[in-house]
Image (cartoon, rainbow, N blue to C red; front, side, top):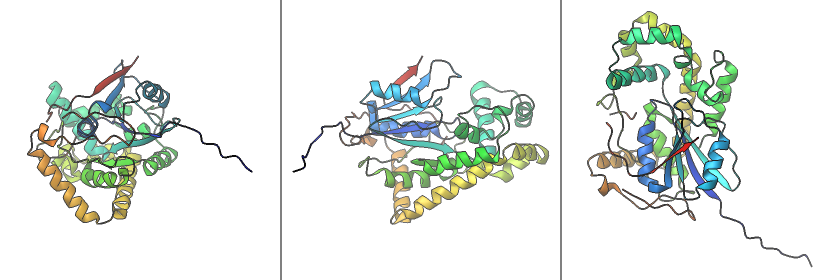
Length: 313
């Protein structure tokens, strides 16, 4: 008779990994993960401001921190790593590239007292820093953030494939839709997760800030500068359109999608009117993973619940 052998193996580990692109609502996402996972959430970056972390760096960190269930990093780059007995739920939010450039300027003006006008600032970037003004998001996904040449159709297709395979793709302009869909599809791994949010680090107090409207940007910058920037960001604009289509496709697969989206937005409004402690809930760590729990357009800083901050030398 054939023998039957039972092998004892570790449980599969589920980890959300947020690839944080500057001015794309990442601080808001970090506040959500900090609330949901508490000390099971960590921000992971290099010691140098211009550091780049790879999938190997992430794998090495996770190997030494079994209690971590969610990670966010400014410095981590695709491709997503394959890690033994670990399922990585990658998350990356994108934005219309011209709206992102306006937000970048507004943020520097507010935080660093930038003396230039928007037009002067952007003309300077066009002239001296193409890596900061040309298809930044396509390069971030397809080329690990390395700018060695203008982005091509090949890069666009590579970035598009990453978005379509992403566990949690998102857009700043579809923040609610992105998270409502993600909340549904994350439930098998994270049964109690709730992704309602209060916008953090915003550069406008308006729910529908003018900087997200292209007609406003054309009027602000002038047609010539607008066209220059649009030409430099053709691949990013197409990636934005494709990401919008993918999020809509996923939301359409969610049962009672309109009802769930309305309920999600109601939770966001309720959370915005609550104290930080009243919004605390049981941990959303995956089954078998211990994770203690502590206490406009996304892009005001409020204190976030305690979480781990890690550096890679």
